[in-house]
Image (cartoon, rainbow, N blue to C red):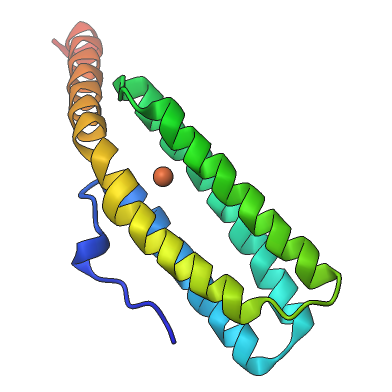
Length: 150
Ligand SMILES: [Fe+2]
């Protein structure tokens, strides 16, 4: 069963929303790999999903830190725990366990909950900071522009 992307999963931060959307696509690809019963495909998708999720976490953590979000450290811990949990699944799968149904269940439940609760919690701080940063960048551009063309 695939996850359907919906506006309920959107934080209103386009760059993060598109990354979350991509993760949902990976989970759906994993679900497809599970149905096709191809272990090679399964491991491929799982590796890509883990890679992508980890870089997404790092990106998110940077934005949180930049914005001064007070629970950045707690959020980072949640990311680390998740990474450890998935690594565990991966090890079990390598050892021959059939973990896909359980893994898919965990991934779906975890992601939806994480986006709707944990990520939503940082959204206001990050949005406000991005807005400020855009203004500063525009102001800088303005002065650079004025110097050259004013
Ligand atoms: Fe997160």
